[in-house]
Amino acid sequence: MLVDVHAHLTYEKFDEDVDEVINKFKGIIITNGTFVEDNRKVLKLSKKYSNVKPALGIYPGHIIEMSDDELKKELKFIEENKPIAIGEVGLDGTYENMDKQIIWFKEFIKLSNKLEIPIIVHTRKAEAKVIDVLEEMKAKKVVLHCFSGNMKLVVRAEKLGYNFSVPVIITYLEHFKELVKKVSITKLLTETDAPFLSNIKGERNEPKNVAITIKEIAKLKNMVEIEVENSILMNYKRLF
Ligand SMILES: [Zn+2]
Image (cartoon, rainbow, N blue to C red):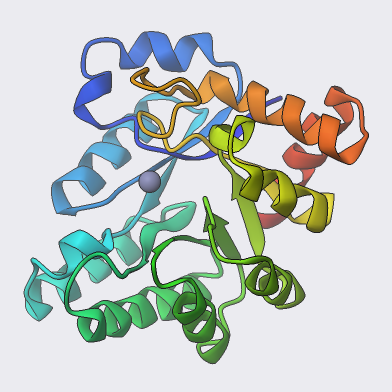
C-alpha cells in the first residue's frame, strides 16, 4: 500500500475531481492544512474518506498575517480536533518576521509533543534554524517535508531521530537522490505536496505519483520496489 504523507487535496486545483483522485489512489493520504479555513476543509474531507487523514497547521506565510489572538484560537481548535499530525508548519526565510515564525513554530512543536503526534515541517532558507528549534524544543516525532538542507544537516537530523518525506521531484534533483542514499530506509517516507512539485513541469501533482518515488528509492537503495513500499508503510504505521 502506498503512502503520501504530505498533500494538499483541499486546494483549488482539486476542486473539480478530488473524489476521483482519492478513489483511484488505493493508498493513504495525509492532507495538510495551511490556514484557518483550509484546516476546516481538511477535517471535512478526512471525515468523508477513511484513507484521507488530517494534518492541521498554519503555514509560515500565513503565521505572519495572523494576530496572536487568532493564532491562539487556532491552536486550540487544532488540539480539540485531534488530527493525525500537526502540519504544515515550519520556518520560511523568504517571508518576513522570522521572530514571530519561530515563536509560533515552538508552540506547534509543544502541541505535537503534548498530543504525541508527528509534526510535518516545512523549511525554506531556514534549514539550520529549523533543526536548532526542533532540537531545543525536544520535538519527538518529526517529519521533514521536502528537506533541502545540506548533507551535514541531514545527518544531524537523522541522528536526532527525525524522518524525511521524499518528494516526486527526486527524479531530477540530485539532492534528494543523495539524501535517500545517506538516510536509513527506516527514516524515509513518501510525499507529493500535490498539487505542487510534480516531476513534470506544469503538470498537477497527485498522490498516485508516490509510486515514482518508490521506484527511485528502490534503484538507489538496491531494493525491490515492493520491499521499499512495505518499508515506507511500516515507517508510516510506526510513526503515525
Ligand atoms: Zn505543502
